[in-house]
Image (cartoon, rainbow over all chains, first blue to last red; front, side):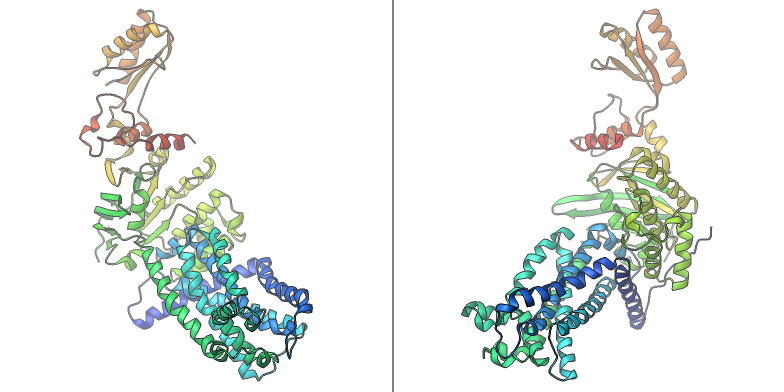
Length: 279
Length: 345
């Protein structure tokens, strides 16, 4: 039996460290992507769920919903895009919590790899996953009557805002995954995530809600992304439903600012929590 | 960077969790190329010790060097020389055995080609070649453990930490893992293994440190530890409770020490210097006295007994040689009992 005597040489330069971090992050991104290949049914479920919600909301409630200047089914598609980004917290959380519970996280920490790789790999895979889900949902949206009315640049900007929201929520998922007792706590995340998803402008215009509730919904970070996307995608209802509030009027600004704030809070928390594992 | 003759060299390690001292001045020296067992009940500090040595936890006090590198000052260097196999089979269950090992190889900075070669080599060596391309979720407990061991061996590390490598395995899987560990040790890797199974330490380890409440309370080869509680014991079981006194007198004649009488099980036990002479003399004397004997024999104490003795379990006699040991005064209450249960499981 031949044994490979191999002692990895630690990088000495910042560039070398960056190369290690990139290589290890990529290895763990591939790991996450390999999970899809090995578990196509899981991937199918991930794609099917948002599509089902779009169809359910669109056809079950759509008949009774009046959207001035537009169509309810088209109205909720950008809302569902953003809601799917928010619900993505659950998958980030589960992946991190499973690794911690199974001892895989400890094994990684005892290996000569870049400490950032776990999060970088997770984040990259989650963003790829989000792109795929958005593509499938957009296709589904087109089939039920949703269209992009604005220009391609604006549409891409909308896509960027959606991914920015997902990016910010990666840190929330990582942090909660590190804090949680185990992957079973995903129930807790679901309970936290649903109000954020529904108490928003995704499914109904906040202007139709009682005043205080509408204000809360308008200031919901997810609503900022939804409203901004409706604007960028040129949704016909956007002017008729505008409440005239400051939050609604500055949705693009908020859709950029909120994710930055979330990142500014949860990225350091996640890093600190990760370091605290060694105490 | 100096490679000492000790693969693990720790002195006075301290680590406190929420007011409880998990490590309370633990000293440990493991000569390179040997298998060393850390033996102790749950909560004795074995896992904390491994976590500190494997750079997963920072010690609050003391110092430790692994493969010549300080675990606090140069954790990254330590990580290039160690393998860690924790209490859970820490593998990705969705990936196949081969994909797991290639991934861990890549994370150890082997190139793609070398990582693949190494994965194939390890799968072969750990008897997983046939299952290499099946997801790890479908592996048996023993196979998963062997995959776990293989993952810890990617680098052919100088020091391999095994934290309770056979906990929860059925007897057959346990033997599979033991064989794998022996093969590793044969290849020159220093192995530090923690276990609650005395049989495991007895079979695998060149030397054993008995750990209790965060410190080492006894150290030596399994044989030496056994001889520390008085070598061979003569045990006589009588059929009639009325004969206990006679049996005790007989045992007292062949033993240097006061025999121990257990009326409940109708048994008399006493340490004896010469097993054959003592047994012959006892049989003859009992026969002459007309005592009906249910069972008689001479045996060496098991490591279980050594362990219970040292960690403050029920003492076997007044002649315990471990009186000079620290942490003996207050016996641990529930731990030895728990250990008993798990050993027999």
